[in-house]
Image (cartoon, rainbow, N blue to C red):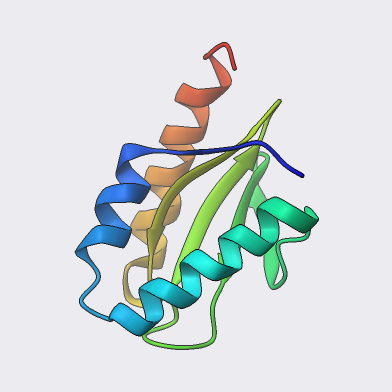
Length: 100
């Protein structure tokens, strides 16, 4: 079982989703990831950062980095992907400097 940290940025994003069904599906997928250690449809986007992709809603994305613990950085969707990746890289850099 993996050890996860969910950031405030992620919590704010997931709580703001009006798509209740989508929110539940994302949460279920993250719980599966925690239990199995397998993220499913995810790819490296460089600098140790990963993008977990969801094929429902507007193309939800969850960004994470694997350090001593897996840090769930933030979420977004296909329409904000470029800006989200830039912000996720900033968050990843911050978390690399933290003691976990």
